Image (cartoon, rainbow, N blue to C red):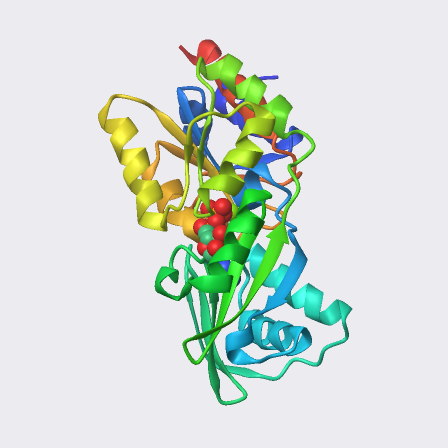
Length: 294
Ligand code: ADP
Ligand code: MG
């Protein structure tokens, strides 16, 4: 055809299931020498499920009351962990009271008022002062099994621990191998989740460089550090917590299907087919197009 190479690269990317927002992106993707992958929703399917629900003696709640409180507080959140908790409550047919004063802190968790109680649901690492005694033992046990532990506080008192597990995408290992071949180094895992769960998953796909427990700004700092060393970074993510890093990197790709609106808006390109393997495919395409241009 007579289409200019970069425009035809956009069209080709579309055929591969990736929506590139500009011709410049198709030029930049090919320059990538360092790929940073988010965990939840990017390396994994992003549809985690509740595997364990433990009520702690301190707050004296039943398991169902615990799940009800947590799900009510999580209801307004679009985070995959929030959806897992809400789905678990729905499956048990638990009616959810309304939540007010909802706030969420990306990479940390949520807080809301439910039935007159302040309910916090989030990362044990971020709520560390509350993780003592039986809560600490439960968190350790869950994380040791590769799960994500979510702590529930009611009026500042630890009320329970919920275990959540996610599955690797079926094409995760093949994608990591393809990216390693294209860039000459394995991708790095950047995650807000705990180190044990992150390493557990990374080990299954051949990733050894794992940066865990990161807040959104820590993901940005990692990107800036590499770029200051002369690297050209591609960030692939799906969450609100990934948006700043998607913006900071030389290029950013968002996973479209379950991706948050902010990630989709911020990224330079969006995976619309919900296959991670489209990422190495568009990098390869971009390189072909660049050879035709220059
Ligand atoms: P990732 O980088 O793997 O996508 P996030 O940064 O989104 O992970 O989340 C990091 C951690 O913050 C989670 O593992 C969880 O402990 C906590 N967290 C974030 N949002 C929520 C939420 N809505 N409910 C419970 N925990 C949350
Ligand atoms: Mg994510």
